[in-house]
Image (cartoon, rainbow, N blue to C red; front, top):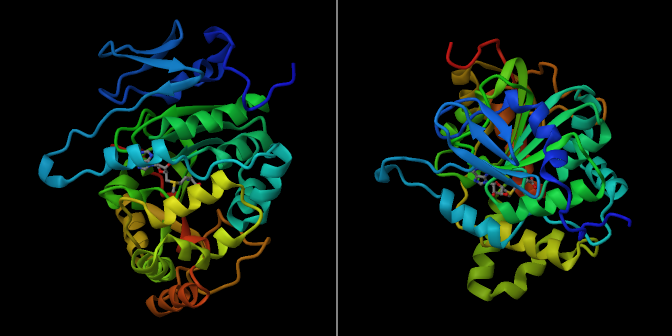
Length: 356
Ligand SMILES: C[S@@+](CC[C@H](N)C(=O)[O-])C[C@H]1O[C@@H](n2cnc3c(N)ncnc32)[C@H](O)[C@@H]1O
């Protein structure tokens, strides 16, 4: 029988958890930090004894924040939003080939795939429905890829695609990025695109996932920009005043290429999200400096240079002056805030092992 996205998850636990078992040394208990071991279809903590189930090949490693109430926490609110609205979802006809075509149409995924080494160990934090994880894992089967997200319904869609296309070098995990289920310093590359701005403390969220990068490894984060996001903010305000039928003002919602599920996912994510914040190039450079990361590159380039297929994501570029960065952000605004006003910044761990 040909495998499809609807194929039931029928494989046995032993067979299914091979990738997780092979890479168990990357994992840790999100409750106590102890080592985890695959045992009888679950992950067992060798320190505190907690057992985490792995149903349908998705490891359930979510652990809540145990913060002081005064600090405020939107994790549960965002989790419930994305459980109901998996993002970005798949088109009905998606296959590895269409995923590759779509990813390559976007400069970030295209450059990543070309420049991330064939044997890299990659973690995508806040992978949503797992397109990028599936894409990076399928284009080099020697890569080791983990995709982690709060939303189980999103992960199930990513897992269905993975299973249908037998991308066996990828495992999806349900995880809260403030309580990572991965050891510090384990990954060559940590990616988090469009995620940290949906947390109550993006700076702390950055620090939490930056710890997972190995010395000299890389982090890539995508965030809503303080100026680039203004066109979306303006449309959201109009929708509130005039009604949701004016969603047609959003260029992506007019695109005939999206199916109904993807259109709905984009509309809710952009216009009905319970929480988002906006950030600047200068602010993220400050996060890099504090965490001991060197600035490598950004999309758009923070010094105003062109980003084309020859742009090297993992080589050091000039940061640009404060004036250059302001001009780049103004250009994002004037160009209508493409991609929801997202910008991506890439940094290299200057050599510190977390905890040094
Ligand atoms: C806008 S979606 C981005 C999905 C994907 N990265 C993309 O670019 O298409 C934001 C994702 O962040 C996840 N998320 C939000 N807070 C999180 C947290 N504390 N830990 C893990 N994932 C989180 C949500 O569940 C959601 O899937």
